[in-house]
Length: 88
Image (cartoon, rainbow, N blue to C red):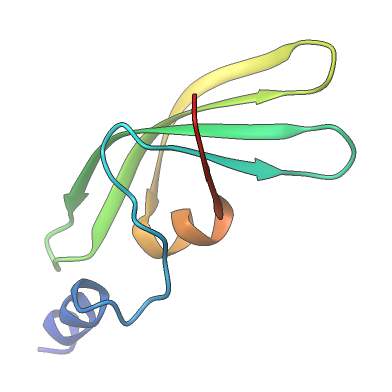
């Protein structure tokens, strides 16, 4: 019961977040000149109905791309981590 209420809370917009959609690109600027760029691959709910974002993240500094990998975060956490929608 509690898990269903939490799932409904996430679905109803109880978490402040920008519009996250498949194909969307978001940035997080870290200290110095380090930038994380995330491209959304998919958004799927877990068994409790909490949406999770599957995305590819690349981390780079002013000189070169450091690495690229796939990750998954809950939608609320993703929205906090990547607050700036951007173009590719």
